[in-house]
Image (cartoon, rainbow, N blue to C red; front, side):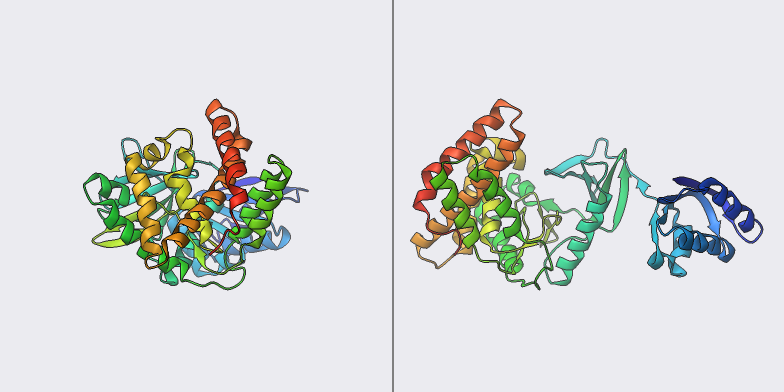
Length: 377
């Protein structure tokens, strides 16, 4: 039930307001939403009305508070006792430059100082707040990340706002002539910082747990011997506590005044770094298994640059390691990547290209899993 609050609630009308609210509620016992979008002021007398309502109906929450009203709730401790949210500033992205797009959202530059990530789902507020907390956690742990400072409403959707003064994505820097090798070296520095960050058990979602879902799905579509071995290979990957970004590619790395910063932190997890390399391979090469230009179109660079960025990333991350070991790690990443893509494309399977991609991944697994002894290094 939603009840709209308007104007002022103070000692002169608090009793009348309480009677009105109780009349609206009647015998209703479910969630009560107080919409404060038109509430200009609330005094201590009004706060007592809200407090009594919360005690009688524990599922009461207040939404769309204007800044001044929210500050009253915050200063008096109400934001710690119950669910109270601000009204979201409305923002238009019409005509704005698109600087990145992923499965969950599109990133726009709204002015030289600001970018906004607009989530594709209208029910994304929980996801937005979760990503905000993940970004803060990463920042505190020393990961170079941009932290969103505001949540805005964009039409029927919601977005996170970042202050990134004249920042450019690595994709844009590539198009401006910066070499693939140079940017790959820079990205490897960030990767090593992420992977050297060791978390407590359960501090972030387990990537291995997610990956086992892919393998368990694939088993039903593969020859029994191949499926059984694939699942064992996934189960044998050690459960480690390294931080993983999960969607690490050139559109999610921004450069601002010589400093490199990560965005799109909603995929943060923990686990063995091989899962990170599988995701990197997928972005640059794996998703282009049928349409060879798919990755280039997504990232805004050439296919050769995609291939080179993958090779340089592996080269500099594992610099000094025997070439045979480096090649085996690339193969591990490919197997995990195609196992993930196979599930994704098989489940989607609504177009001919999806079916071709699923068939490619299936054949890859059938032909390569027998030659792989483990999926970790």
